Length: 130
Image (cartoon, helix red, strand yellow):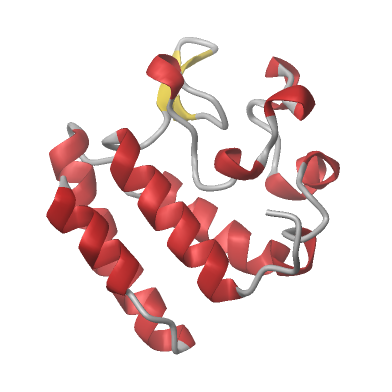
């Protein structure tokens, strides 16, 4: 990172990272399956991919993205509303396993790209490469 990011940059980064890791970041928290900034097997949620390892602490799990904003790089902070939307999309598609999650998540991401005037090419390329 290191430069001002655009919504397109953020969208592409999140899409590619979530596809590469094979699904959402989920795990048990207080005995319930939930989405996590950092989950099992090294997975991260949409916003979790922007939190540097040195700024991550387990205590942020379960906190609203606005409450962990100080953990994000400065170049992402102007896009908090957009990042929060990506986070909600990640979290709202429970599905069964990873394939069910992708089947629900992908059309939602394509709709978001269309509504925001963003290219979904990197998403499609990443999905094709899976």
